[in-house]
Image (cartoon, rainbow, N blue to C red; front, side, top):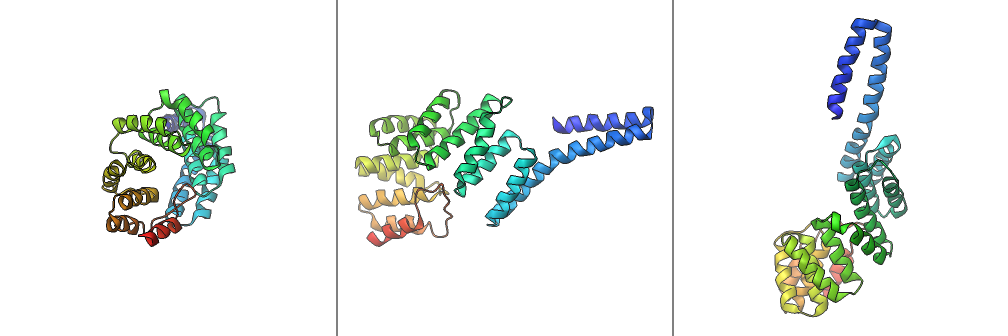
Length: 263
């Protein structure tokens, strides 16, 4: 849509040059270039932010995100910025950015659901798990996806409501039996219930997905250990070597090493 509008604007400027003279056409060109700069600058900030983050230059990345935020981001860009802030433990700033979306009257309901799902992560990581669950349950009827299923299922486990956790996670598995987070929730759930056979069966499934988050390997190793498969548990844990952890991670490499020492 933006590209089409720019094309129409360019045609209009050409028409002004032809019909109204150089001065008016030049003035219109300046306006056009200013609008183009404003729109494109934020996109460039996002590109530089992604590149720096991928290189491990987190401070530079967040600085580029902040420049784009001050310049004017769309809703999805703001939610992305908030997510990266949260990965680095900047919870207050992340919540501030998300609040700017939730308080923005022109944001669509879909965009607000997206922002709320990320705001729930902030609540979760700042000790407000019950509030996080309530926020996700509020949007769940209208915003169902694997990520939401995974988050709600995890929160029921964390909050200790095992009966509800099992009921909800079984529903989540029916929704998407290939999602690594949902499978990991099942491993955690049955580890807690002491159902070694079921926990290990889900551990095998999630390990076949080569998940990108460290918690899955830790929980799978616990299931393998409980099932009497110490060598397999060790294999799962060793696969986490070099894996990045962030503020969002619930398992550290210290936890991994401690469990390795118990095998």
